Image 1 (cartoon, rainbow, N blue to C red):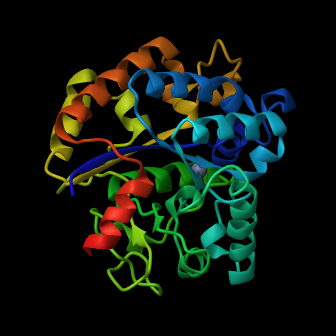
Image 2: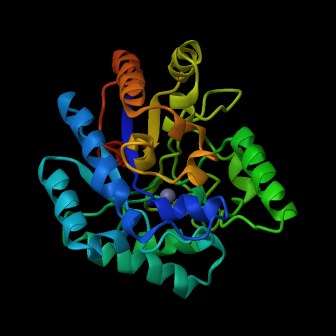
Length: 308
Ligand SMILES: [Zn+2]
């Protein structure tokens, strides 16, 4: 098994407002990521004939034009994945019936557009209750584990800073046990998803480099200088699988899309013009393509399920 897979979490602007404790974004920007950023991402992947996995917050497709957009991509050969119904960052801390409701409700809505086989938890926080629901729905994979201690530490620092200012972040720290999880695909334990076990579905961890476990995800690749981008991809070369995770916001342009300054101030990636970001990502994809053949997460999961 040697593959790279590109996935894009379609978190709306409201998610970032919650993380940075900014309240709610202007109403007219509710769907800006799907309306303006997603078409740019789709055009880049189509130009490379690259099929990707879009993790959709199901509530967003209750807005008919969004459902239409996602259906068009699925028809063209992309995979759609379940990113919960309403993206609660605290999903792993909710009761089992609440977790089941979030995932099942999303599954029902998304299944109207395409077959759904995979899940990514909001904020990378997977829990045993989530795996129970995924098993019941017959999912092939979960792709939520992100074993990156540096990322965890940075997030904890930002959250502590906001809390000290009396403006608690909407983000939630993942269970620290997940930091020691395997970084290559594995069959998780149903009762401790960050450990190996006998679950019917497989876990496809989000990319971190070998040894140092530096995140090799879109946002960190986009803000890194060129030499570091190349080094990160080269370091990943030792891994059999490169699960390259991007976010819809990586394809936003602060100026062209009218993203408010209060958010741009807090997200360095939003200060890079879209043409630069597209160019950087194109070069990252060139580098990745030299080392791994691309597949969707669903295809990778099917192969891992057969092998282990
Ligand atoms: Zn998300």
